[in-house]
Image (cartoon, rainbow, N blue to C red; front, side, top):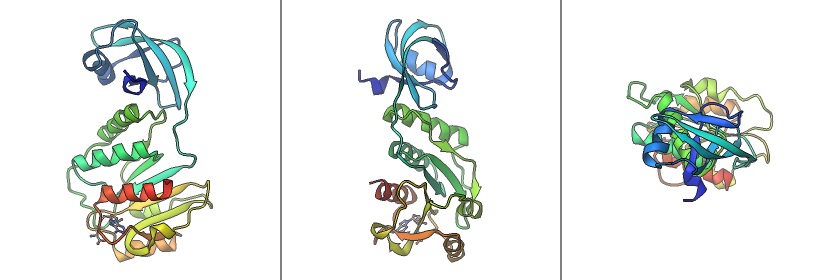
Length: 236
Ligand code: SAH
């Protein structure tokens, strides 16, 4: 089996020659991958490193692994990429989180905005974090994309400290994304609105805080499609 499919996440930092995997990850190893003593697999703990391991012992609900070697494998983007987004509902939020992990987003900040439906039932932070782990196992990322707690639009828009930051907010009628200027090497922050879009007042606040308004083309995209298009446009 290709090693990327045999990846396992350890919520505890791997510091010793052995690591014990418990909970959902152990269940996956025991009952889905059906690992056995002597099998090899790759473990990551979110620190950026990955560990080549061998199964030392399969217990009822735990798997003990022997750590054979450590590799520093960098599959991150060469710049910080943060996405502020008014999260969509249901399965679409899972899809969005997955794709953000695959495309290398460093930090996802769920936003509450004027036209975002605060009452809609949404996945908990814990669930979103779980999606991050699953996607990281699949795509080989060794650093976990951070997910912030719900943040107000104004706080997010005004929170940049760094001078070299590129800040783009997607809103129909802005400058074409193809023409947007990205400061090379600096952090990039992107913002996507809810299904109801941004209010004119929100766009004004963003512009006053140094954000460029970008247009993603002639069709109105759903939140998750817009996020992907914007991320892909600036990461290339
Ligand atoms: N009804 C809203 C559209 C909401 S789409 C309106 O007309 O403004 C959800 C979000 O995706 C938007 O807030 C925006 O951030 C982004 N988006 C979707 N299509 C876009 C486009 N063609 N250009 C720029 N942003 C877009």
